[in-house]
Amino acid sequence: MSLNIVSRSFRSFFTRDLLKMSNTQVIAELERERDRRVLSIQSHVVHGYAGNKASVFPLQLHGFEVDFINSVQYSNHAGNIEYLTLPTRYPTVKGQKLTERELEELYAGLLLNNVNHYTHILTGYCGNVEFLKKIADIVKDLKKKDPTTKYVCDPVMGDNGRYYTPKELKPVYLDLIIPLADVLTPNAFELGELTDTQIETEEDCLRAVKILHDKGVKTVVVTSGVTGAQTDECLRCYASVAGGDIYRFTFPRLRGQFVGTGDVFASLLVVWLDETNGNVAESVKKVLGSMQKLIQRTSDFAQQQVDQNSRAMCELRLVQSRKDLVLPPTCEQVKVEKIENTN
Image (cartoon, rainbow, N blue to C red; front, side):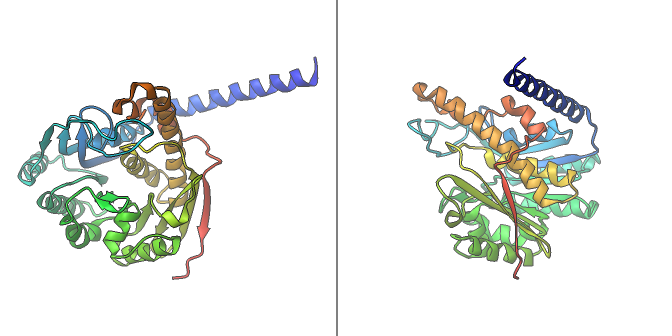
C-alpha cells in the first residue's frame, strides 16, 4: 500500500472518528436537563425568522425552558436589508402590536399563578415607549423576587446610522432599562445613541463601553458596525466586563446581510454566558462559531436560489443549522485578542 493511500485512509478514519465524537456530544447536549427558564419579550413573525422566532429555538435546543411574549406579531419581517439583486423587503406586512396594558395583563396572570420564576430575562425589539416602560416594571419585579435573575437586553433601536424604532425610546433605555441590565448587546449605532457619542473607531467604541459600565452594566458586547475597525474581508465585535477584561473578536465577513442574526446572537449569548459562568471571551467565540456556520449556510442557499428573486430565499437557515447551534464548530477563523485596559 502506498504512503498516499495510507495517508488518505488515516484521514478518512480520523474524520469519521471526529464526526462520531461530535455526534455523541450533540446527543449528550440534547439529552441534558437544565434548571434554566427564560422570559423572552421580543417581536414575532409567522413566516421567517426575527425576534422570538429566531431566539426561542436556539435556547430550547440547549435545554432552556422559554416563556415568550410577542411585542408585535407580524406575518413576516419588515427589514430593509439589501442582498444582491433580491428585493429589499417583502411588499406587504400584516399583523398586530401588543399594548402595554395587554403586557401587564399577561404578566399579572403569571404572577397570580405563581409561575413567574425565571433565571434569565431576554428582551429585544420594542416599538412603543409605554410598552418599554412596562418591560422595565416587569424586570424590576422579577429581580426583586430573585436578585440572581440575569437580564440580557438587546437595545434594538436602529443600525447603519438610522433609527427603525421611535427615537423616544432612547430616554427610556437610558433612565429605566440600562440600570437594570446585566448584559447589553448594542450594535455600534445603538452604542453611540446610548452614550451620545460618535462610534467610528475601536477607540470610540471602548470609550463608549466604559460609559455603559459606569451606568451599571456589567457586561457589554458590541455586536457589529464599528466601521473604522473592519475591512472588506473581516468584521469585528467587542466584549467587555466592568472592572475586568476587554476583548476584540475578528472574523470573516460573509456574503449577505440577513434579518434575525442579532436575535440568534443574543439567545446563544444567554446560553454560553451561563455555561461558562460569565467567561465572555469563551462565550462570544462560541456564539460567533455558530453564527458563522448559520450565515454561511444561509448565504449559500440564497445564492443558489437567486434566480427566483425572492425575499423568502434570504430567511435564515435556522432549523437546518441546528447541529451548529447546539455544538459550535471550532472556528479557527475567529480570532480573539485581549485589549489592554488603559481606563
